[in-house]
Amino acid sequence: MSIYKEKPLDRTGLKTIPLAERPAKVSVSQFARPYQKGEGVMGLIESMPRILAGESVRAVVEALRRAWDLEKPILWGLGGHVVKVGLGPTLIDLMERGFVSGIAMNGSTAIHDFEVALVGSTSEEVDAALPGGKFGMAEETGAWMNQAITEGDAKEIGIGEALITIAALTFILQTRPGLIGEGSAAARGGRGWALAGVVLSLVVVLLSPFASANPDGLERVAADLGFINKGQSAAYQIIPDYTLSFLGQTPLSTIMAGVIGMLVVLALALMAGRSLQKRS
Image (cartoon, rainbow, N blue to C red; front, side, top):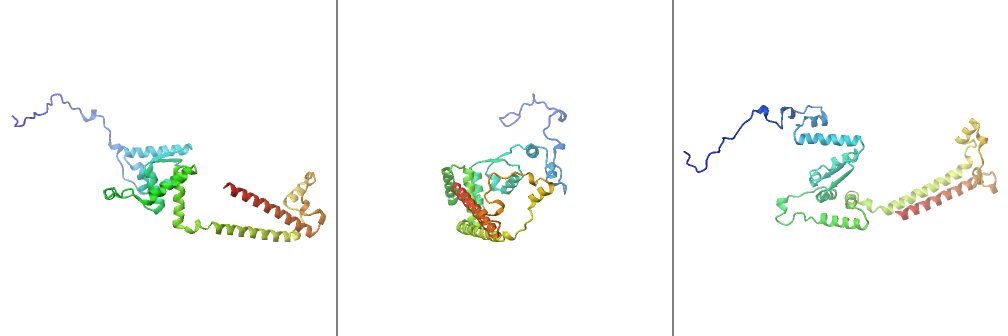
């Protein structure tokens, strides 16, 4: 007679079955095996248990390989922890190898990635920062991300491109600040190269009368193969045979023809450069 008011469980209807008859989710054949030295990454994956996450890893690897072989797009969806635990370089490597066509992410991912690009570090201790009202209150993160998004919207570009642009500029300012202010120096350098090109062209033109009188490569081939006389004359000739008709077949005629040709090319190059500059 029990002193407790609760009665023992009634086991009248309880039935057991042999282990051999019970379906099992896990068997020894699915267990992990020790990794053997020299097996490489695939050996490491194959050594994982064929249960739950271990089998999921294999399925993901196989799906990625199949998509890559078939040249199909590969889209990734990820949260902030992927970036904050340092997997950014791995994602970049996967991009370069063609295993990432696009990434869908949430706001925390953008925040961590932005801070890493900005100062090389990210994340904070929630328990320590939350009670004092400091969690998520970093000045640059909120202000600069908002500025990038606002300016990106004005220029009709997406949030991702806007954040990448300002993060890249910030990185350059921190590592090579002189690059941002080198626009005028680069322009001066460009003008220097242009001047050098003009001087070099003038030297070549002045030396042109001393060039070999033998036919050039195309004419020589045409002569050797016997079809040089089959060519048809052009409808018009601006500077025939690199000379000016009113100066005759003289060294001065060759030099002046070269100078005219150089000036025409220079004018066309300047016009093309200004046109591209206006478009940009």
